[in-house]
Image (cartoon, rainbow, N blue to C red; front, side, top):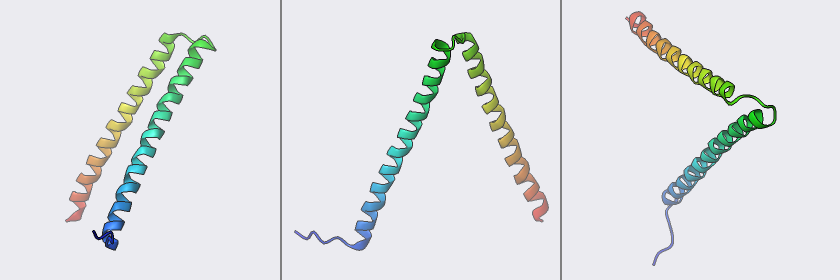
Length: 89
């Protein structure tokens, strides 16, 4: 059996391994961010006696703000593409 691998095979294996490692890192970061946010909400409700309704309102407003920012980004991208086509000629 030949255990000698070409440089390309070794490089491909290493890049796959690094991609898996990066993906695990990103998933861990997302998990920790969500966990930290939930901890802050818990602390606000239990430690500082903030009403759950108020926290829900803040959450709703945050989601709406993110939606507005995303909508503005889409509008600006479309406007940029249209202007690029218009002035390209």
